[in-house]
Length: 386
Image (tube, rainbow, N blue to C red; front, side, top):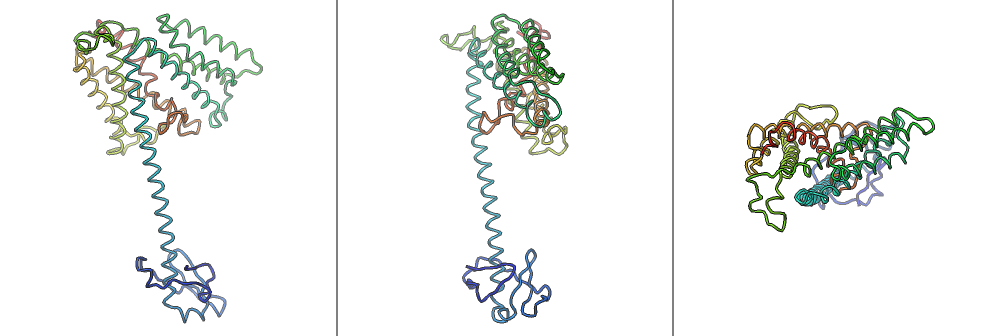
């Protein structure tokens, strides 16, 4: 085994003959300077310095190169091992991301098609998990260092209230009174505690709005718009799965909206990787204007294609506007969650989904989009676009 250290006595080294290491690249030690000791010389390469006894140097000139070869080979091997390990880790993460992404996509598609209580209960479960992640972010060191977070019991109560909001929306058809009542109860609870702070009230109220109120619009969109969507897949849809009555404006609008958001994220990622040069905002440094434009184009194109396939909405202009709203709602939701994570000092909101992070990391693009999509169909489209 070749040995090299700050002080090298070649007579005590068990050296490997250079002829046994033909794969090593040529590298020579050069005389750097004379040592203060008359019995040793100092040799150096580009990165290291070696002290070698004069007596052994004269007898082992040809072996010195072998020592340099040995050190160079060790450094190169360690570097290659590190790169290989990093590549394997990235490949493993990508595999998890793809597998769980496809699984989530299939499950979400089935839930959207089912609608009703199946859709609402699934949404309520996702809302509860997202609310828990939000209040954990609020309590993180990065945010809590500049403000006082709500007490833990208030955070838990708010998470439960958020999960109940979609259920109340489906049962009652509207949520405004329930949200106002819940906000009043939470506010009074915070004000009656010892030493209340405005930061506690503001973060709790925003949590109710962001994690509870906004997702309820997906219930209003999917389950509330029960107008039959004519000339869609309903004509060939099995009767056992609901038949033609299953295909309502709410179902078609939700499918197009979800698909447009997925397309926007995909095209923005690919476009940013391929052409991204100009940063979009310092909130999320990896986002670029080139990626944003690619995402906008992909979102609008998906909306137009699906509007032709599903025969809703009738107007191409309406499909373009719907895709436009879906994109900007998803982009704003993504940037808002990135801002929260940046202030919290974390990369992911949680670790619930392997390869993806937390629930909020997956649904941030959907938070504001449901409200925009519902308002567009309900208010701006005549006869709900049929």
